[in-house]
Image (cartoon, rainbow, N blue to C red; front, side, top):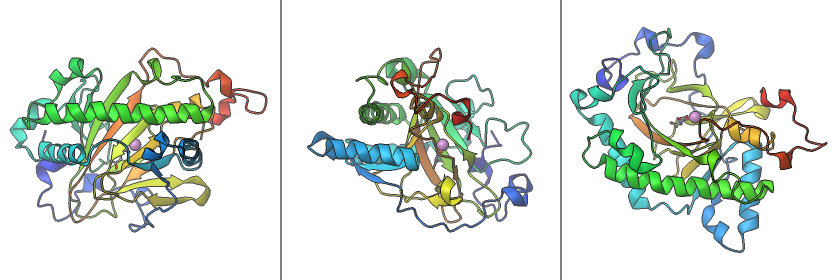
Length: 318
Ligand code: OGA
Ligand code: NI
């Protein structure tokens, strides 16, 4: 529990040695251009005569960058604000209220941990504390969620239901864009839903450490509430450059996971991304991961395998 960055870092003047990365792995340039090339998609238009154009934009963004942002997504500003407040409130609870959730056991389904999945064996830690729990079906999962703050279950329950609707709506548009049969992602492939509430405490020296390492989400698709503080960066292969994902109030950041890359037979791509820390203030984000049920075998959709797009092993190794 003492390991949580938020438990001890409030007045930290310098970065402890076990958070300082070797020079080659440090984040480098701290100021990166906010990325205007990450598409901003108005999902409201998917319900109008602009549907085809909206789908086209989603496909292009998923192909080129693996990331896009959505507005007019149907989740109310009020629910977003209440959820963000409760996420922040959770990390501000006194240590004794969080202690029972803290665990390094990867099999514990609702748990609070710090850094990566390998805290005990890694030499250098990441500057993040994470609360992670399943969300679907809600009635089966909500009992294991935090009891404090007292409205956590109610607000995050409503948030999870809305985020599921939004995630499935986007998957339906992707399905249509890829030309797959209707409902392709609707059943086994999207059964699981996991929420990861990420808390990056104010950091005394962002040039030496990272909140999350360079990674690609392994699941189907992710929807991130970034809030009003930036820190998420996407690696643009072609440019060999990190680009900042601009924080837009009440927007969601959507990214393609490796499983969707495989199902789309490489047509869509999961992009690598990482999280920078912030010197001025703490940053809290919430990532909703859509996962297939555990016994699902992930393979390219048959409709997307043809002579000009054969399934090649190398396609998946980036
Ligand atoms: C993640 C992730 C981004 C962020 O949780 O996988 O990439 O800004 N989060 O917290
Ligand atoms: Ni991620």
